[in-house]
Figure 1 (tube, helix red, strand yellow):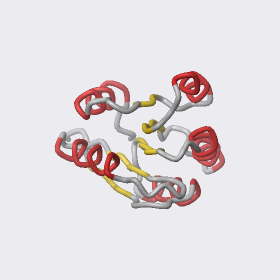
Figure 2 (cartoon, helix red, strand yellow; figure 1 turned 30 degrees about the vertical axis):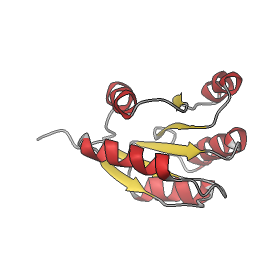
Figure 3 (cartoon, rainbow, N blue to C red; figure 1 turned 90 degrees about the vertical axis):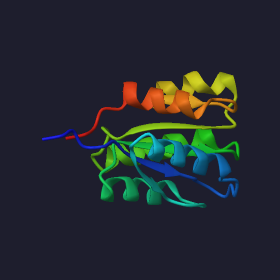
Length: 134
């Protein structure tokens, strides 16, 4: 039986209305052969986690341009634990100061892509670090 495609949920949490980057990443992942679920704008952490579980995704990619990364990433990771889905990996990108990246990784964010990261680098990282869930 062929290995199933990676399923990635791309989310735009919070009040940030800038989603061009998220759409570009979603398209790059789709073009690389992954199944992509894009949640649209203004998602709460609860909505993101519910969608991820319902869609049986392997990972959640969050795009945060609002500066709320130190609140939104921890909320999603905590909700995944509460909902007994800690195996869904969380990564993201956006405007994240370099000094916050180690803090985010310590709480469980798998990777953070800053402005200028290429879609090829994001695709390669996912392929090398996100295994399909059973």
